Image (tube, rainbow, N blue to C red; front, top):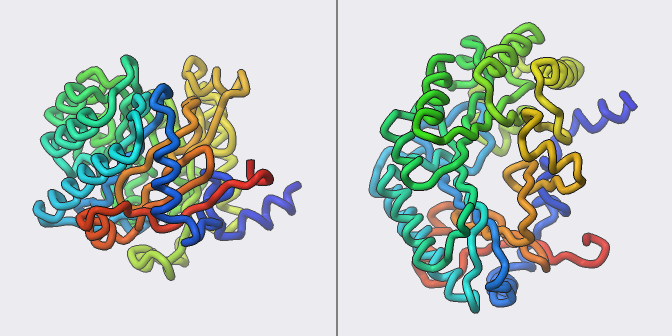
Length: 363
């Protein structure tokens, strides 16, 4: 078994988020399929919605997400308007707009839109769709930018869950990955969100980073567990400098070897379980009372593009550059290049670029 693990652990392969994975998507699926699948949606059922905001104020060296650095507010505003236009276009292609049961903002740093920008997008959604009475509203946040004003504003906008990108709390590791984020910043972010009423918190951690050691992993797990997030996702760093120019700033000599990566992953899991978390699937951990644990125990656990979930909706509408939609008939992904995405939407058409029709074997 260990030989099998080592063989696959050494491969740079797509992270499992769908079947087939996005690596199997082709341009043979595009706007025509997208439009047809939207038209077939049942307005009586509830769906999930993902909103992608591909901008950050700075790009961390380790980042592998579809994101760009934005310093001009007019660039961000133009993207927001395109996102709102896409919402209207997608809604117009659905016979009777369904209700939204789950809403998830990802990025990038979605809060870069500002509270008014976030409110504007939510207003656009509300004008075309209805929100279910108890819908979950989650947003990914950079702890360094979570002010008391942002936390209270998000609560007023109906946010019920926040996901904080912690990655690692060791200062040497943070310096090596270009993300200086004192532990106090994470603690303050968590406190502000909870004080505002957003009490469901997810933390993201990464192993396989430069300068990480087993001892630093152990310390990070202890400090993170002390803050008591409801869920923790632990991902392996994928070093792909040929594809991600920002990763070329990482000293490859400081990266752990394969066996060290495997040991870090195992230790991270062992430590989080020791601190009372329940292991969920490949890379998630949750408190015993969390709904993910009951979903796993009852066989209702699912995996989507945000990770493991107890969301049982069959349809996920992805809105924004690079976002992926899930339909009964297949997957469709929007253009990843942000200017091209904006141009497609401003031209009045769907921005879908590739996807996958599901056959009987896939299903």
